Length: 342
Image 1: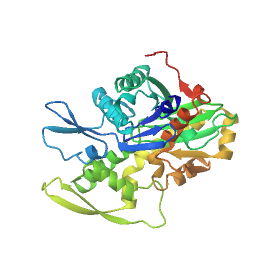
Image 2: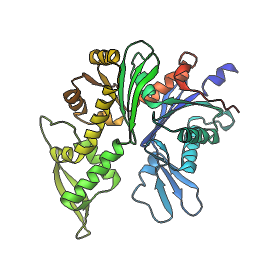
Image 3: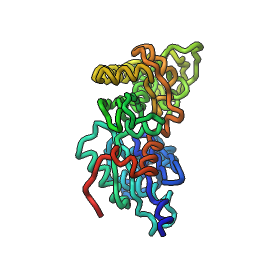
Image 4: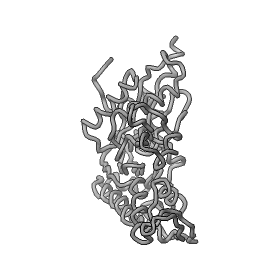
């Protein structure tokens, strides 16, 4: 019996853009977009994850595809609960079996009310106990930083809704800053820029594709061009324009500066001993935003610190939370405590 209980515990990286689920003993078993498609008249869920993401910007009146999390916190409670429930069921095929202990990641600047909403959603979705771990902490553990040692580790986790910057030492967060400028804002900046410069309307998905294929934060050795399709705002007809990586970099400038400022501000608040450690060890970039070309260069250029991108930036937070599940007793101290029991 004890053996069958092991597989239950899970860690969830409930992100604005993607949700990852880590199951004890199995690793990351699910990585899907945090999108829910609902029937507006009956309120029933039609699709979740990849399938729902394909519907964004393409739905008829009766269906709406929503992203239930905004800026790293729950914006639509029911949809979040449905989404979590769906993911738990996908992982645990056998229904009666699924009453897992859950570790969920939350942004570091989260309020008590927002944290309560996350726990509530998890309990509603069928969790037996819910523990909460702060995202930068999970990201640092997942990126393999020695968080329990008396040395400063700095992690910059750029997700979809929030950028979390934190300095961690002795298993705790010493200084942290959570800014709501992240991947989604980069997409929005591209949409705005295309409107202003080319009078072209882009959808969310196209903007994200442009960011991934052409986005950069530092001049590249070789700038490339690509064609982008959208709707002409004057004629209302589809049109294609040529855009270069330099143009896209220009479009993203304001948002990237905000992220760089957050890093500088955090360094500014860091005790000198730890700042010295970071000078030696460098800053680690995690999260999807860590994949933006040249961001490491840009940070290196602006802070003078060594910057490394984590090995698997998209999964760092999930792996870190997963480690908390695997070594529950050892890592208990990094979890934010909860007194509620069922």
